Image (cartoon, rainbow, N blue to C red; front, side, top):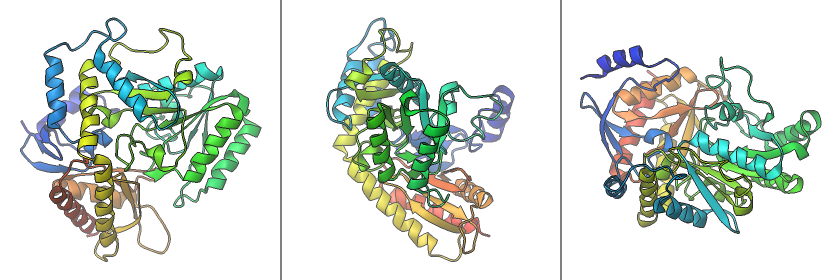
Length: 427
């Protein structure tokens, strides 16, 4: 079997709405490496879009899953509950980045977690309005698509979004938006569209993911906390992409020192198995009535034991510290590339921990995004055996999401490939 024939079968069987970054088909993977069906090896700097902080098939995760497979695979927690679900929630509660009692519940996808966080906030406050930010990504379901602050491709052709969702600009030096601008827009929103007493929640990513790996300034997060406290709103930190050591903290919001009310988690929680959740202040989490939350596959026992193993690996292998070391190594390599004159122009190297990105720009004195050159970079990298993804509101940001378990040798090999791709894209 080869990539080309599988691509033809894919096009005949799967609608075009499900896009794929590259026409390669995975055959096997191990830690930070992946091999396609033709046997070509790749270093993985995408990590399944931030899912594989503990790498492909971590031995501890796989052993836990194997044990669970020998016991049972499904009962539905709402029918016959099981200890791994309870134990995982206990451990997540202990990690909650806020003071006081916490409770957690589990789902399957990041969008499910976000939807249920909104449901919980609405049940707690008795309000319906929600404020999100331009450039943010919160999912593709009807509600989470409305929260997502980008039209193309996430909202195009899908009609008018549900009522009660509002957006504010997100601070970014490159986009010319300051924290003051963002807060002024909220003041305008409260005068023109919805009064604060009708807002259930404000949701924000500590670092915008699809929006371009833009860290939320501490000044913004602190101001949102103050707004929520003054007006009885719930502050939700969407940690789907930033959670579980990626940013050099267990959760990205911890960099600000601000305590949220709810956080949504998914992606790297279960090391490649589908699992998501909401962690929140106990009094808020208990607002919905019994039966109002849940799902048939929510909190799969297989995914729960995988997640328990992931938390063990993060602690035992000191992946929070490792994220900071990896990030410093990546930034140093990118800074060396930025100083060269034989690569495409890059700027704005940024990100906490190992959640690193940079922008590809047109040569010149002004910051002008270059989406075409960005495509050339990621394609040249793929040709050289490196999987890396682009993102950002102008499609000119390259993000690096390698597993935190990657060796220094593999990391350096991947960074060398990325530098070669920056050179090749200029030619």
